[in-house]
Amino acid sequence: MLSDRTISFAGRSITFTNQELLLIGGAILICLLLWSAFYFSRKHVVILRRSSGTDQITFELERIADALERIANQPADRAIRAAARSQQQPSQPLSQGSRSAAYSMFRR
Image 1: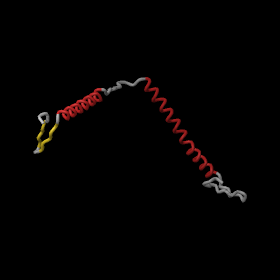
Image 2: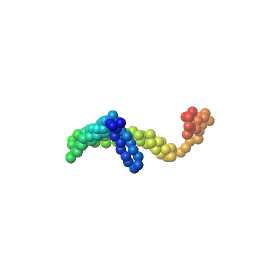
Image 3: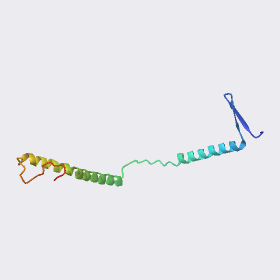
């Protein structure tokens, strides 16, 4: 047909109709529009100095982190204190009525 466009490259020919060329051009145009919209819509934020708000948030987050560390270390502190007390006191043999071991996994 006369409306077909033929492109030859490296000994191969590709034939495009006007409708195909219109669709390819439209797709390229839409891609360029989307790319430019994403590229130019970026907002660049530059902080030049510290503010009192960020200082207050930093202080509060440090306080919360310290409290969480203290809470997390409480079981370890108790275990260390209990181990230190048991080393200071002489160990007593288990009585006849007691059937549980000192370090029982199921605490029976």
